[in-house]
Image (cartoon, rainbow, N blue to C red; front, side, top):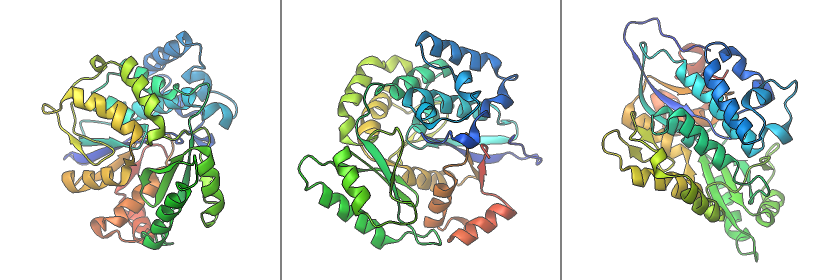
Length: 343
């Protein structure tokens, strides 16, 4: 959808950038709507992919069918999601909307850096494609996802405590390693090696189809990626980074402001802390709400995979009287606070 506003006063928005897993069979062909207006941008990315002897953005997006083993591979998914999200951002009417801050989930942090002007488009592609391609030969560990909410989307603290207890238990098993990877609204994403994840998949209580392992995901945001972080620091220079043009909220709920950001610190956070420590998306959104009090959260495409998690975070904060799934759904029908451009 095109983000427009008929009123004369600008609406204040926080941009939310999605991470891995947001491009699905429902979003196949997402770039078609931008093929004329932004053909040069798409062509540049395609040429970069050709140089690397990888499937191009256009080839992936124009396939007849979504193939998980192809579309979810890091070197394919990362750049494809970046293209979709960044073009959604470019298509926002800035005469009618004021972007007051930018944040993202997991890989979405790299996209947020591009949206905020820290990385120019080509540099953003370099960072995103490099990080997405680090494990072409062998994926390090993996991730599983597990819900910690009641049916009304309020947090079930007993379930949350149980998950933490199971993580402590599995870490007592020799050679098993598991960590909280992402705080994702009403979900916990757990990263670890396969020995630990296999145990957790068997020993966490079944809730519908949970827990399940995320296809082609590594143990992102855990110490298992220390070597990946070291390699990234070696090959992705600080010179790629610039001062942000918009406020940025990172995966700790920490604010990076224009004109006061230390580029060296931002570079190191992005390629070290962000890679090997827990990514607290819940904290990032909570800070965005309380510090900037936006008129809307705007979730870039592709898809709407983060919509539920964002709703759960709004509920956790009782934001504008949204304190349950029903209240959130009613608000979305009447006067949406969350605008999903990928719907």
